[in-house]
Length: 311
Image (cartoon, rainbow, N blue to C red; front, top):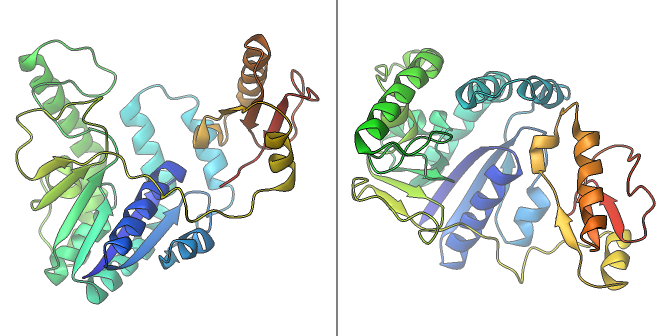
C-alpha cells in the first residue's frame, strides 16, 4: 500500500513518525514522510538511512523559534502555550502544509498525520482519502482521567473539565481552522478536538498502556498502540569524534537534555548549570545537550561533555 505521513513540530513530533514510516516500510508498504520542523531541521539523510523519502515542507523565519521560546517561558497556562505555538510556529507554514497534504492524498491510498496537522484532514476530506490521526500522548477526552495538569476529581468533574477545555480550544483554534476549510469550500467544524484533530476512522495513541491503561470509554476508533521507536540497528549516522572519544574513555555517561524547551529560554544557562552540578553531586559522567557558549559549573570538567545535538 502507498501511505503518506505528515507531521509538524520539534524533534519529539518528528522522530515517532519517522519510526512509524520505517516500520510500515519494513512491513512492505511504500511510505512518504512530509515534515515541517519548527527550527527547519532537515531529516532527509536520516530518513534515507531507513529507506524513507522525507519531504521538507515550509520554512519558518530563523528568529521565530527563539522569539516563541522566549514568549513561552513567560506563560504557564498550557492552552495559552499551545495557542502561541500554533500562531507563531504553525500558522506561517499552514498553506505549505495544505499544499503538501493535497499532494500526499493524490499519491497515496492512505494518509496518517499528527493530530495537530489539520490541513491533512482537510485534504483527505476533499479527496475522499482515508485519514488516520496520531496522538503522541493520551490527550483524548475521557471521564476516567482529567485533562493534563488537573488533579483527579472523579468522573463527573473529569467530564466537565474536558468539556470546559474543549470550549476554550474551540474559541482559540476554530476560527483559523475553519478559515482554511471555507477557502477550500468545506463546511466549518464545531469542535476542534472531535472534528479537526480526531479521525472518525482511527486514532492511534502512541503511548504505553503499561503506564496509562486505555480508558473503557474511548471506543473502537481510539487505539493505544505503544510508542513508536526508531529501529536500533539502522539509521545510525556517523558519531561526532569528540562524542565518540568521550563515550570510550570511561563508564557509560548519563545523557541530560530538555529538548526543544531550551529554544529561546532566557534562563537556560541556569538550567545547564543545575544539570552540571547534579552530575557532579551524583559523581557520574554526563553528556549535556545545550546550545551556544557554556559558562560556569562543569565548563571544563573532565567527566562532562557539552554538545549541541547528536542523532
